[in-house]
Structure formats: C-alpha cells, structure tokens
Amino acid sequence: MIARSMAAWMAALTLTIAVPGDAARGAPAVHTVVIEGMRFIPETLELRVGDTVVWRNRDPFPHTATAGSKGGPASPAIAAGASWSFKAVQRGRYPYLCTLHRTMRATLVIR
Image (cartoon, rainbow, N blue to C red; front, side, top):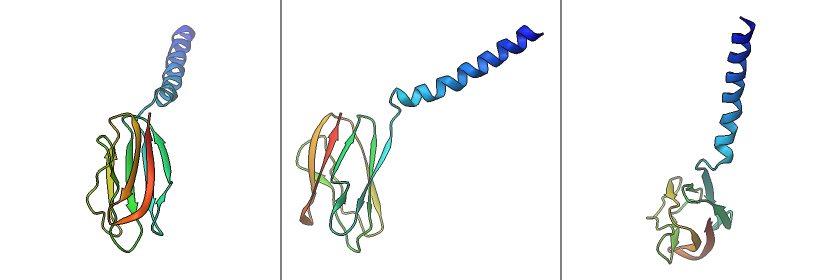
C-alpha cells in the first residue's frame, strides 16, 4: 500500500516538473508593441519564430506597422484604440515603420 502511494506521489511530482520544462523549451509567446505618442514601444523587440506580436494603438489616429522586406509585418491601418497581430514565421531583422507617419520606426528581430 505504501509502495503504491509512493509511486503515485512520484508520478504526480514528475508531471509537475514536466510542465515548467515545456515553457523552457520555447512555447510560443505573445509580445505587445504599444503605439503611443507617435512611437512604437519598445523600439526594438526580439522574439522567436512562432511567437506573435500584437500592436495596440493608443494614439487618437491610425498607424501601420510595415516592414520593407518579405517576412516582416505588413499591417493595414490600425485604427485608434484597435490592435493588429503578426505571427513570426521567418528569422531575420525587420526594420518597420508607420507608412502614414514615416518618422515612426522600430525593429523586430526574429531568432
């Protein structure tokens, strides 16, 4: 009886330990870029293939998040108070800008 209880306890402990390991192996993450004050925050964001980036527009007018190269973000106009998401599928460095306000620039680094 004690052996069975001990075996059940060890199995439960093994399951508990395995869960954090899954996260450490690189489960996809969701990152947020805030658009506020005519800038992208953070200005540089590092992420991994499979991660998602969500741009949240807190300015009172629309913006875009558009990279000049294939594999980077290419958003439509993101209305005030709205958001848009992008899933990273290709490694690389992707400088992007708001095509409506070309002084707004930032970079995604996908590893």
